[in-house]
Length: 142
Image (cartoon, rainbow, N blue to C red; front, side, top):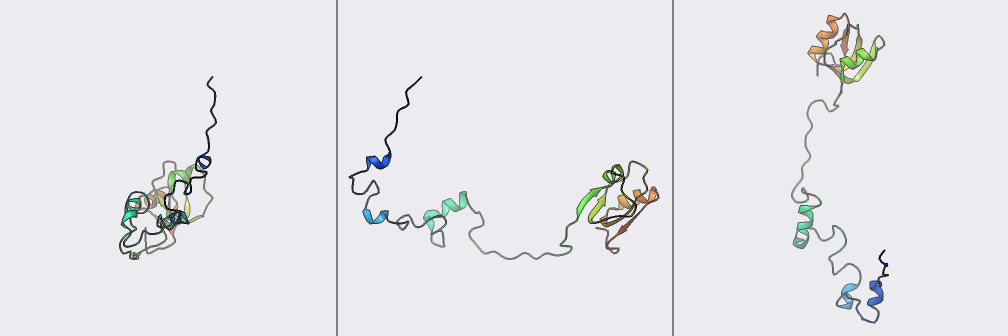
């Protein structure tokens, strides 16, 4: 088993060295000589820090940003498979208005569902087994 040698701390080595290995004494005060802390100095003319930004931080850091227009339905519905409903033995007239019902029924189950949206195959499959899907937005089958 090797003996563990206790290393001398670096601050002990610099005792009496006047600058403690930092060069000119005034430059060691604060973060001014480094150009600031963190993202400071990364502005329009911060060429010495551009490599840090381009590699690590934000690829979209430079340039203009515009807000994107959102068209159509902003509320995206979660999907729900009909097979999952048939296995869980859904109560009659269940409300799934935050979901879009998709898929087909593999078991003959009569379902009466209120949903936010439904695919055409899901509607056909439920009607085939004697059930009904009522859409929250009757004008859209999203």
